Image (cartoon, rainbow, N blue to C red; front, side, top):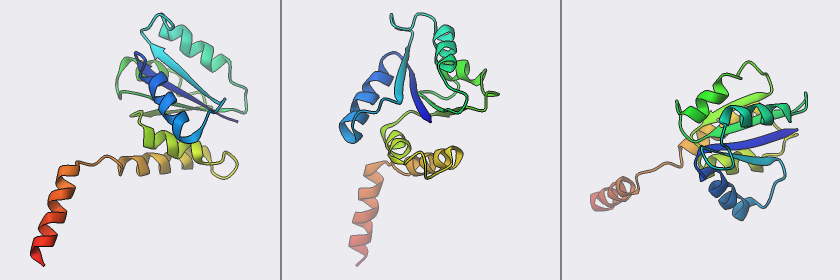
Length: 140
């Protein structure tokens, strides 16, 4: 079974889960870790508890907020665990792509690679898009 953990500095993980649920509905396989809050006074202990809660057949997809940040670094120490898949760059398009795919249809590594590529394409500087469209219109 696929389990998801959104992990962030502060309450960002809770907020993005709330937004995701507005789009795709509630999902019992999603949990959050809001580091450096009163709920998570010790990130090391919280990460260990999460990993201990997994069954041997589970795939745990952990999405953190900042590459090379302290939350990500804590999970990196467990990457030898074959159940753990770590992604940085927590954002809504990435989560939608990961959550909407049926766990039975795609290999977890393939799912992650595809979702990361698709979500990168959603990051746009809209001013440049508008400028490009206006230039094309003026050329005709």
